[in-house]
Length: 127
Image 1 (tube, rainbow, N blue to C red):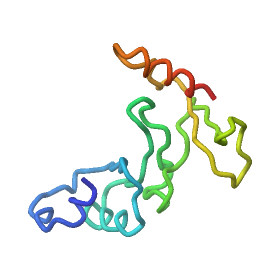
Image 2 (spheres, rainbow, N blue to C red):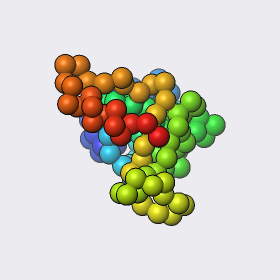
Image 3 (tube, helix red, strand yellow):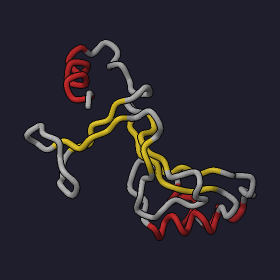
Image 4 (cartoon, rainbow, N blue to C red):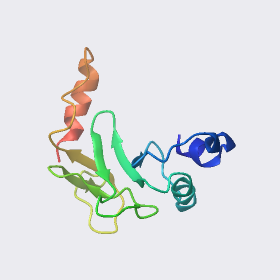
């Protein structure tokens, strides 16, 4: 949607000046794309968010900033616990690569009628 807003000439045919908040997710957002969206919707707070179906929103650009930092998905939402885990299951140190594990009150409890997926989900979800 952000790409369409920024690049489609038809956007000029609509008054979207009433839009005040734009959270862009689903894929990393380049600084260039974010700048283009800001030009199209100059009155809005605009930035990147990160989350998944199972987690809802995990991070959001700081609302103290009108425009999110390019290349950043922001800061973790309050109440969330997170850690980076290496392939061997140990905690990664600063600068080491690993997988992001998160938990908090907004996490899904499991998958409806799918015991196998629930077992896998509960195995990896607790930081």
